[in-house]
Length: 340
Image 1 (cartoon, rainbow, N blue to C red):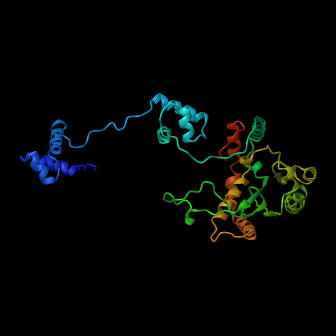
Image 2: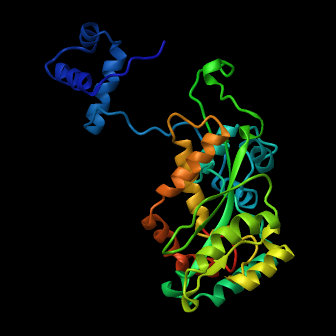
């Protein structure tokens, strides 16, 4: 049975009763404690003038500071390791728990957090990204606002978030209310093409099936992009940006763009330099927040077009107006990963 702890009020009451001449046994009988508890408390008060418990050392540590630093060196080399793997690599001949590993990492200010995913960058990718940014480092807003940023994105009907968690009791994992139901391949998807600039937003285009170079010209470039560009004077004619996806670099598409538009060269593996990627994120969040949620691909397509129209010019300008910051961030990273 756990010992009853004396509250601070009771402790001072005991000191007061003893000061009036009551014996240890009399105080113990009245308050329901053994007389030795009363005597130890009175002795502590005589020695220290206080009644609070002294600081206790607690359970002794099973690892030294030097061993803790060794753990941090391991985690810097292998940041994706689990606590079980770290326990074996850290002190294989010592009986430790994974809780000890996590406690040491927590004490060092580390915690398991969400992993940021980025495209794989080779040294050649980094060199090309850096060269592209250095060539445009001094561009001002007047230059950047001519750029028309384009991209395609695919939206799943049923998005499964791998970071989803559920609050439940032990041994209730298979209770129906604790199960998140999924469908193969997200239940289907809708692919759309979009284009924005600092001053305008072109119509959203639904891509039927897989995008090909011929489809890209007939359904995107001819009816949307070139028609929009022809409405501008030659001196202020926009500059068209698309990435290096295979349909964008077919010979027919390249020839067509050379004859009908001014294009912006683009470094491979650089979605962080395209502000339109953040617009796709806005659309995705809004679609997932719809109540009731979309149930069919037709509803998903209609919702995408509806939410595209709701993206404001102010939201787009906050993205396109920050291109100098994006470029500077890529230069500081020497063509590597940025926070965008």
